[in-house]
Picture 1 (tube, rainbow, N blue to C red):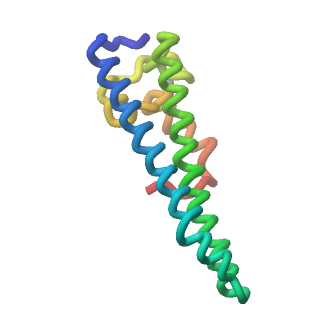
Picture 2: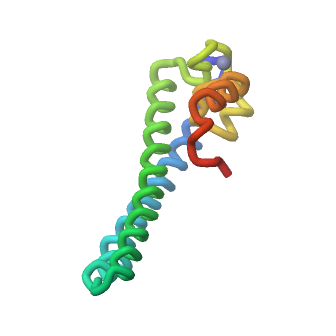
Length: 131
Ligand SMILES: [Zn+2]
């Protein structure tokens, strides 16, 4: 474990739990919306190509949101496993401690700031732009 006190670890655990619950609620809501209302209405009432593509577009939007959420939920799961194994807060690339302040703002962080920067430059340069 990186140099985190018991209190700090507990705080980060709570952050992860809370975020996980939020995401799960969002996904559930998103599925309910697309399954019960908008999406069903649109697909069942499709008569021309215009409506069909609207339905397809809506499905894509929901799916990409759900994909993003489940991706983040996986990262939260991974962070929890790190906590249990006792190697949470340690950069997976260089082994340096990730500062508590960084984990507070970004509890699923697996890399220190400099390794994250390098990682994003080499792996994510063609990915969708980050906000
Ligand atoms: Zn590092």
